[in-house]
Image (cartoon, rainbow, N blue to C red; front, side, top):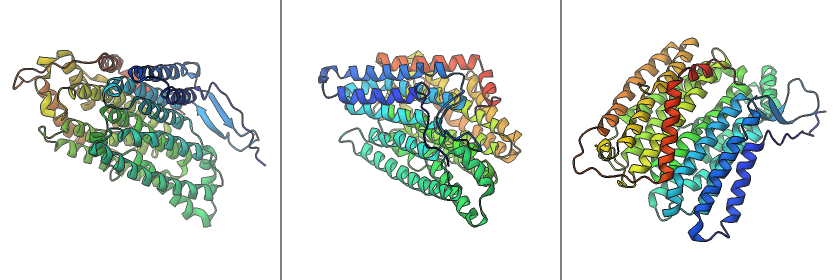
Length: 496
């Protein structure tokens, strides 16, 4: 009989644990800190996220795990594993939360309730940091909900704003539906295999009794559908544009990077780690989803009218849907070749996180002078703020995959190569067509930055935290562009 007594390695679980602990500290401190000193809560959150990032350093060997079953089993069964995949995703989500916190300092001073905001942001970040380390379905679902539930409240935190409330409701309903479908799929998988640990599920799915075969197949399919909602894959993407527009801009930036990383991480774990024997089911399904998602996202972004209110945020929202399609390609390719293809998704996710957060940081800055945030409002930005315009141009060119954004180009090449190596030539062709489509709207926005302004240039006064966020993302993008082999290295590295 398998023992349920499990070992605990506290250093291994330190990054998400510290983030959760700081969230509780902020929640309690909010009761005692006077209104004029609420900014201390924000700096406490930033300090906690920085410390959590520092705690990744002792784990960099990627060979630790905890909450393991002590009895001998056919395969090692642990609930929490700090391998290289876990550490890279934790770096992405904690760094993304840290940059979001920098963007949020000004908003919490002027419009948003500070105590509630920082508690919710840290709680969501703790769940997002826990998820990549989860190696059983129960922990995976709990981490997914810990990351998602605070995000609903963050989206609707602009009190008295109808659009914010509507955005939170749409986000909530779609996410609850996704969770329900995921839980149904998980219950089917558990009924068919008798275990929740991903490594044991992978082994037991190979010899499921005939009478349970249909149940297992339905469980795999439903679990994938649930995570497709979380990744905003077509046709489960309808909540994205309205949610991004209605949410506070720092929250929209957080959802576009950290929220997306959560969905893709869960998708990778259930497909590559838990369901490899059903690759003939999820491989073609994800390939079709990737093609549909990148096409729908790019076509919708192409149709954005520059003079429409909030068109800048809507374009980034649809762009994020298209980028989700690119991120799905290596996961689909893993079904046809090897798990190493996942490295291309991780490399692309890191590139996307840096430049998309940078783009949202500039959008948040411009929104101070132009609340409706139309693409047309960016005309002549170079005349008013050369450094800001150059930074935004650099971010957009990276997203397009054009120089001088070399890392964006190399990341797209790794994804393209993953499709070709897996024999998915048709998907590589679809991706190539979509990259060309995306060039138009990225270059149209970039060119607008350097055109002569229609009136007197509007000076954009940048708060120090927002300036720091833009500088950090631009520097990171420049460093990665100076070392493009980074993307190729990840694409060729075994992360599990």
